[in-house]
Image (cartoon, rainbow, N blue to C red; front, side, top):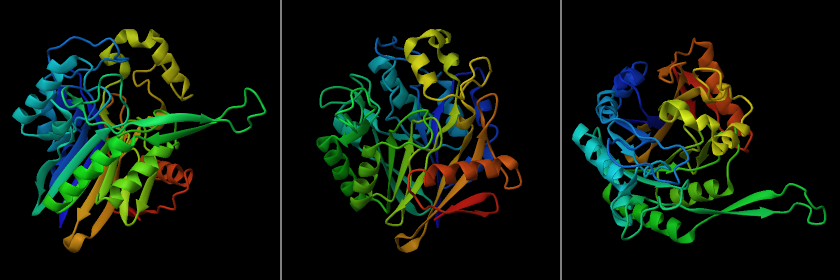
Length: 368
């Protein structure tokens, strides 16, 4: 049996990068393979691109801190991958490799961005395919241009009562057929080359509890039908429901894990109209606090996949909590916050129609 751990967004920007992982390092190091979503490029080069709402860039030391904390493999498919241009993206891939980590989801061309990363987890060969649905203009890789692997979606506003002007509409979303087909093809190829295929997706509705977009369920089911063994989602900055589809888990959002507060990257962001709109999505923001994000972004944790012989997979979740300094700490079952994380996952899953169970065993939740 092999143990794979996966976490949500990671982006470090502080003098002592290693301090971000002090409360989770022991757990991360215990996995055969540990996967993270890299939210910010790692570079000291490049210039902020004009369409970056909140330009994020981590120091080079962040890559070493991630590796020393136990992270082996990262997805670079995210909506900040080109915040400081092509130079910073190229640096990121080099610094990750120099620190001893594998990466996928971004590259010099669309083909390289779609290419899976292959790693060993114990005696099992694991493939990770990554893509992003949260795409500022120009961030998607093309045949002749760097960027991240895209899984685009389109939005349609459907009037509930067409004869009632001003009535709020339903929000429908649909996958880009070509992007989905490209991702399905990579999963099928990876299925033939690896024992297990995992998919990392940067997607979803940010800051709003519970809500899932139509395209997310469509994508998750299509990718599992194509051969994926688990979907590892992130971007919304808080935990969302967990679905078990055909015996395979879909983590619609693993939430934040080890990521700095918005004003650490750019103090001026607090006055930007785009940031004010983000704040309006969740009433729990408190811009006067050191940890200014809403309280419901503090629950976090790790997806734990037990890869067994014969293609059997057992899914668990290790609850954690984000402290005032934005650093995650793992929780014991006796901690009241452990129960709060469990309750939040239960509520998030029920709210969107999933009948997922979260049974406690030691300091873990068995997901079924």
